[in-house]
Image (tube, rainbow, N blue to C red):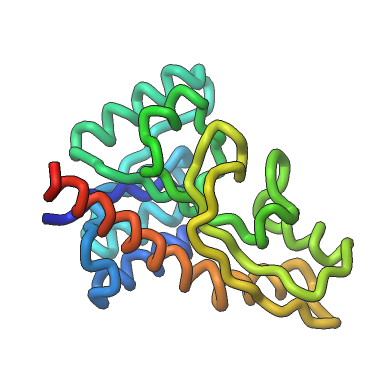
Length: 203
């Protein structure tokens, strides 16, 4: 028995790539990525999904209400019997109603050590710009469960990454990805997938 995982993406999909590679290497033993959903039709992440033989779909956010977007997203998830969701660079906030339907089954990766540099408006390079502006010596990444507060859910895993004197936001972003994000996200996916399999077996 495997937990059925959907990965939600908006851009290039490097985190998705490392999830897929981890699955292929046998590091995600209790889960299977059965769907990749993008809210951006031009996302390279959809190409990555295709390259790994995973179905990819686009659910457009632009021009539709939040309720209609989430209804369309839910239809895609239910059609593939998805058990858990991983947000891997998904730049759309999900409503409290949507999140409540997936308690402790939506994971997000954030490129800082929460509670630093997180919450509304902190995403992508903005996080690393803020860390450098503050002069912190250590940053990192956090995988947390998603609730109705942006970056506010219970923390599952964290990993620290050193900030070096000559770092630019771009250099720091790459180091955080390589040393923390790409390591933590597959670990977290396996942890939650294993827990869900256990719950199913005991049901």
